[in-house]
Image 1 (cartoon, rainbow, N blue to C red):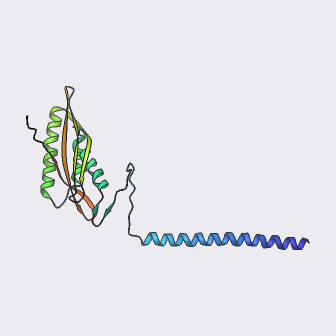
Image 2 (image 1 turned 180 degrees about the vertical axis):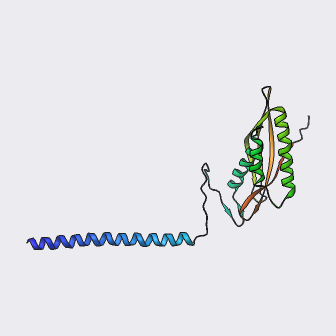
Image 3 (image 1 turned 60 degrees about the vertical axis):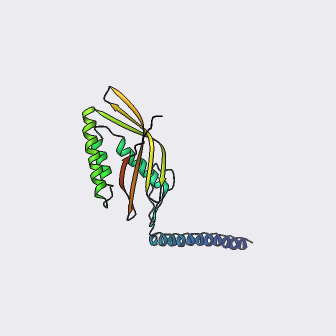
Length: 190
């Protein structure tokens, strides 16, 4: 009887060993196939901290959400300024200006030169709080409306409602800044 129990125990142990060996073999094959698939894939996924929704870039263009986030980044870099931050924000923005449009580069350099002079002269700082965004994904344009708060040293604060149009250029899977202009609305007296 002891020999039968030993044989049953050995068969049971062999079944468990074979079961776990088969599971291990399946896992190894699955990992190998997954590694082959990943190495053959040309898709790149970039995870950026702080991004709360999906953004996509493909051969045909960019998603609305990508345009919105880019517009917010550039409005912050162009409007949230102090005399101490202008130079670093200028470098950030000018790195991402469209190479196809020399006018864009000249316009933004002129904007930063004028801004730097007046901000240092008046010890000024500004902060932009966006309220609404209108995105035209086909034209790669975003109109941002909001409040621009300006501080003049210790003397005064000015708040005004402003609207800016930001246009982009999409080239070689990169979104470049093409234009940044304030939209002035004519207010008629009634």
